[in-house]
Image (cartoon, rainbow, N blue to C red):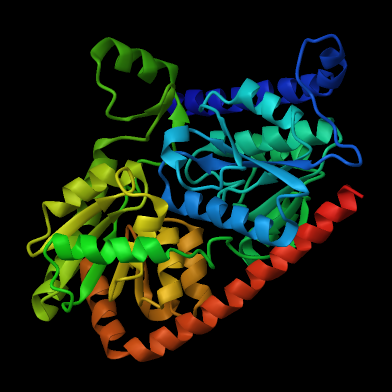
Length: 455
């Protein structure tokens, strides 16, 4: 209990640092007059400098697809003549080829405080474009990051919008920080549930959807076909995709003692980055192996019954270890594809060649739906729950990572999906159209929102 309390105190300490930086940000304009800081303010005749604040550059296929598609939408609705876009990225090399040359890229690290201050101070509007904007599932520090961006923009009198955002059930210091920093942010949430959670902490917006629904990848699909053939697929056998994760090492939290231990011992296996570490215990490791074994049991049965080729997908580079462990449990022909080695277009191309998808990754589901791939979901949080429920498939095709008899449940779903394949395809196609229309509506709303603030 003491260790958990200490970790939470460190997360809470981040909120105090953010509040201090947000307070200081109100003086950056004055300091810039004396050459002590950088600041930019919009005036008529200037291009609008748009800062896209997200989780890019970490080789997270979903996060990258969201922002690549958002840039395309902005280009289409606003035009590069009137706006100047900057994408924040954790690793510039990891987003090479994702954006047009005229889109700027600004590098930052997980110690984001001052780089985010500089970025917000030199732009006219901020778009919070990561799906998990205000949630505690993965890391409270991620929510603190978005709160700081929102708070700086508010302090400097600049507009900020959250675009296709997830908002979880927040309480305590994080709910208070979110309320205080995001008072002037307009939220377009990803789901009705997120909207209710947003209203519970006194913030405003409306329901939209995820920005990745219309994401296109014709070249990635061509690459995927050839790659699968090179890896042993004959072009005819069913392709069973499996996107596994480690659902039991979240959330990531800062720990000084773990950081010191990692430095002394040289063991960085549970280190996310710098002072941030994954959650770990013998019980968590046991649950993780059970999760993989249950999925493998169902996948092996399906593969034997249908002579299928298994496509193992690591949608984020953090999934590499999960894929490595899972591969050892797969008995038949298969290929393994990590986002560490394959870009967002290639990973999406693989998803759109599948005959069936078993996934614990939300964006694996979203990106596959443009090709109407039947899905069996194994969820760890509300995002995947939400998209499967919205498609009316939850009764038979939604499971959770800690379900009893998980392997048998997955097998039952796979058999049912085969028997009702055409029905599922029609449902997904209808849902895809609905969400692409919502994305278009979001784009038009953003255009009018921007005009309202810059006219």
